[in-house]
Image 1 (cartoon, helix red, strand yellow):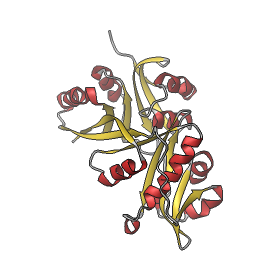
Image 2: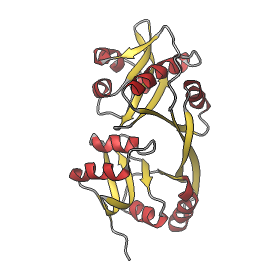
Image 3: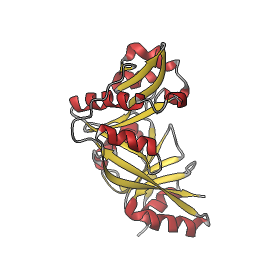
Image 4: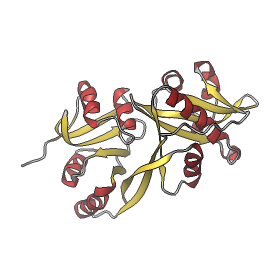
Length: 254
């Protein structure tokens, strides 16, 4: 039977987020769909899809998939444009890579993304330069270099109003930022960025500690995902008490 693959309508986004379920792996997809910051492509019924691929508007080349059926994922990929990698469940990465190679002639390479969650109380790590940020800090955030203004939201103000952010402020200048790049009902993805000249001083860890504590107080489970070779990010996660729970694989056609 032919696989029916299509792009969903905006009014179907809420139904799809319910179908995905609220998990550490789905929190970013739920967030971008709920905020109108992504398109999604489904195979089958939206309420009970055979496969889903989410394409965020902020980084459209990086896809997120939900299915173990590589034939379904390939049919979805065939109707999509502008992508260069796709995150898949570890169990089907090799099969999808082989299918992409067979269908396109491109060699596939693989990159692991490790997901962590914080179940125990967040480690309380303090630094005198770090503090919680509020909407009153909008000018401070907007004046910072692009790499530490945060992401995942429609604007910096939205991030400060609807998310949780903390940062290191030195001489009136933001030099490190920890923030929720995505929030769902049960989970929140935590991200950190620090200017290169300020790294290695514990600023990211202390800022992320503030964010994680606030999330746990709100009844949400903090999530931390990072690449397998991002040793700095992995160290910060361990210091805060995050524990690895699963791995996803980016399949990247060369």
